[in-house]
Image (tube, rainbow, N blue to C red; front, side, top):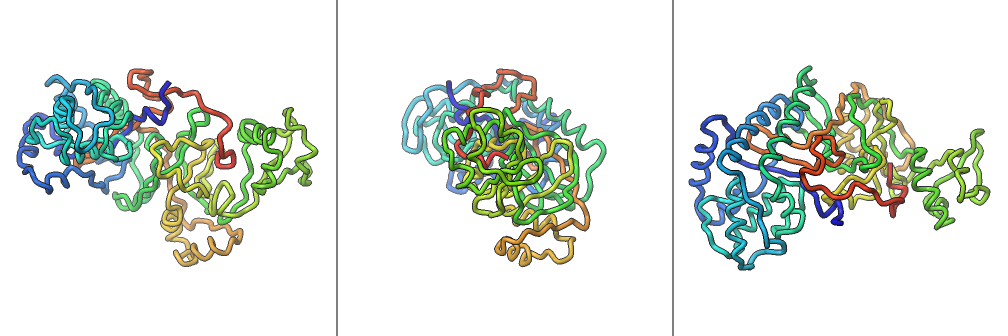
Length: 423
C-alpha cells in the first residue's frame, strides 16, 4: 500500500480572474496574452496573497470558484494523465503532450505553449506551480503525489469547494474581529491576521489521524517561556511505555522525570514497564529548548481539549509536505515572529526582550494585555479574490467523500521514532 506521505493531495494557487458568466472567456484572453519567453515562465510561479484563509473575501472568492470549476466540467473536465511519473526537464515522451493539455485546463500552463513531446522549462514551471497549489514539494518533476493530485476528477474538486463554502459561511457569518489567528488543520498552516490582511504565515505540525487536533474557537491568553512539559496520558500509554520497554534509559536521556500523586519523584527502575503501572504517574520533562517537547515556548489557549500551541526542537518537520505529526497540539514554525505579534500590545515584551528570554532559559509567563481570538478550523478547499484556489487533503476524512479522492492508509505507525515530539 502506498504511504500517506506518497498520496498527498492538497494545493496552492490557480491564478486568473474568477468571474461568473464570462469567466472562461476572460481566462482564455489572459492566457493568450502571455508571450513565449522566460517572463512567461516566471508568471507561472505562485504569488502569495495577503487575503486571510478565513475572511468574507475568501468566502466570496470560493463561491465564484465553484462556478469556474463547473464551467471546466461543462467543457469535459480533464483526462487522467498516464505514463508521466518520473518525467523531468529534458524528458521526451508522447505523454508530455497530454500533460501539457492537463496543465492548460487548470491555468498552470500557457495555452499557447504548444504540443511538443519535450518536457521543457515551460512544462517544468507549470508543474512546479501545480505542485505548489496542491501542497506538494515544488520539484518540477512528475512525482507520484503530483500524478495522484492531477488525476482527481473535476467533479470531486467541485464537491470539495461546495463542502467548504458551507464551512466558511458558518465561520464568517458572525463576523470576525480586527485581530485574530487561524490554524487550518488540513493545510497545517497558521495565519496571524490584522486589519483584514495576513500579517504572517507559519507552517505548522498538527494532530495525527488517530490523535486529531480539535476544532475550537478560543483566545490566546498567555505565553510560557522555557516551560516544563507534562506528558498527556495518551502519550504515556502509546509512546512512553513502549519506548521504555525497548530503551530503559530513554527517560533519563530526555530529562523526563516521574512523579507520584504526592509529588515525589520516582525512579524509573521502580516501575514495571510491561504493565499499565506507569499510567498512574505524572511524567514531566525539564525545560530546555533544544530537548523539551515544547521547545522554548508554550502558547496557552483555554479549551476543553487541553491542547495548546508551541515551539519544537524538531524544526525539520516544517519542510515536509506531511505535517500531521502531533498528539493534537499545534507546533509553530518561526514561533518568535508569532509570539512577537501576540505580545505586541503587552508592555515589556519587545522582540529584544523575547530573544533575551529565549537565550536565558528562565521560566517566565507573559500574560497578554489583550487576549487574541484564535480559531482552529478544518477547510480543505478555499480561494481568494486574486484567483488563488487551494485544495488540501481531507486528512481526517471530514468531507464525507470517503475514498472518492485518493488518500492512503489512515492506520498510524506507533510508537513514533521520536516519542517526546508527540504533543
